[in-house]
Image (cartoon, rainbow, N blue to C red; front, side, top):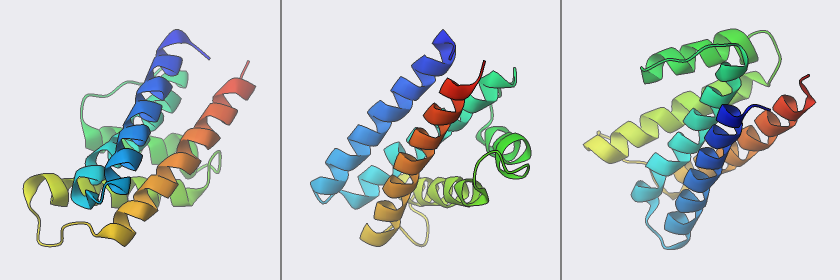
Length: 127
């Protein structure tokens, strides 16, 4: 694992911890953003392995699917979870029609935990 990948995974773990703390405090909408960013930073770490970096969130989400979930490197559900978390973050941060509730944020946090673990295992197994 490269220094940049490790740094992105540390950022992901920090965001996940923030989401968990906010969730435990009953701040469900506030927990939506860091749970998304935990997944987003994880996707970035994986894409660095392919020599890819992007500035736009949509490009990261699309490239994650193209290079990792569509070919079956990681489960397809991880791409769907990343999209769902992105929608929850946007609704929480910008006052969308459906702010994320407790169940949605719990789902996002669990997905972030799985994604970080899977990405770390995959990256550590790479030469």
